[in-house]
Image (cartoon, rainbow, N blue to C red; front, side, top):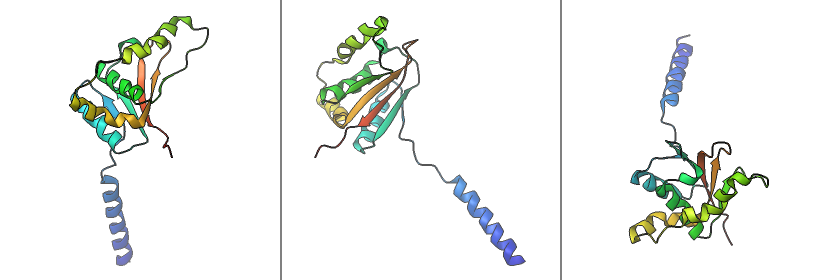
Length: 151
């Protein structure tokens, strides 16, 4: 009887320890307009993570993408990646057509300094998708997805 009680006590202690172990770090990044965001996204891309979801701490519209995030999207395009927008605009939705055609202009940024080139170089292995609410045009998240490997 004592052995059974001892066994269950050890089992309970081990279960308690197992549930209190730290969980693995998330592969998602929260966008805050700081250099810390740049470092975090660059590090995760350098690790070769397949998909990195960027959620914003504050709301912004499609035509008001912050410059720091815009630089990352621009680098994806510069490195021949794809920049997609989701949901896809409908053919009859004329009200946001100008926005879709303006996206390349939004992401056109003057050449970066040498340090910035190192920061953004992992973007060459990624595509990006901007998810937004078509009613409010508020960006919900941006997902960077690793490009398929070429043989």
